[in-house]
Image 1 (cartoon, rainbow, N blue to C red):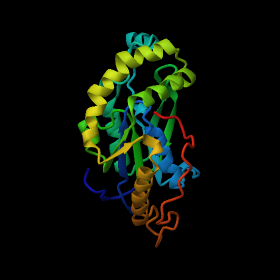
Image 2 (cartoon, one colour; image 1 turned 180 degrees about the vertical axis):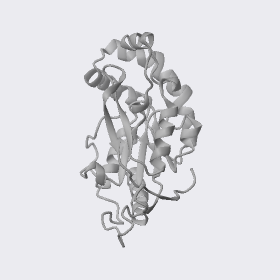
Image 3 (cartoon, helix red, strand yellow; image 1 turned 30 degrees about the vertical axis):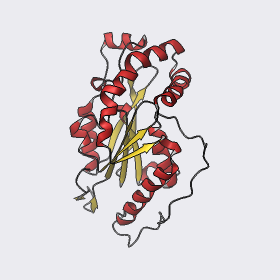
Image 4 (cartoon, helix red, strand yellow; image 1 turned 90 degrees about the horizontal axis):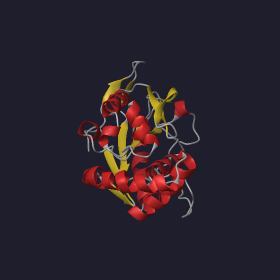
Length: 262
């Protein structure tokens, strides 16, 4: 783990703590984004306004680099490797995470899976929060990024399940045909997972078998975050924070469908 969060002084001159950064890695369609969604839901953050959230989530997909013309043409044919480390702008990700640790408001790009490009006119504003989840296939791959995390989670889901999730997702949500999805998986996704993603599992502090179906693991993580939030009130003028109880929030029924597994 990285060093414990330290105090900083924000633009208003109020002492606060650096956000608690949690990295969430795992293979494609392993359920990383769904795990993050479950955590947000159990902490009661999904219903809050973005400016009021104490826990926020960022996807590494927002940091795909801009493709060259030839790379864009290859991507349209399903012949570009989006699971390779070179597909990401790790320097930009590092800069954004450092700004987050400094308590700054940041703009995170929005990635368009249809055009395979960062949307030129859309971004997400991430306001200072107490806990920040960063999910992605290679968030543990880049050493400078990995060293920033205070906790590292690896969502471990078997390859058959991940492929079964990826096929309908890419067809329905990303406008790709079955042959293209399968070819891309066999030629790029599977080899890249084995070479670049799976080896980073050893850096994880907590491994979550079965992904979002592992309610016990998620509840334990939620409990840990809840305790951290109780010790780190967002408004330092408050004497206590009453928004999060010390008990683990109620678990949803097994089989409840969440957001898109990523």
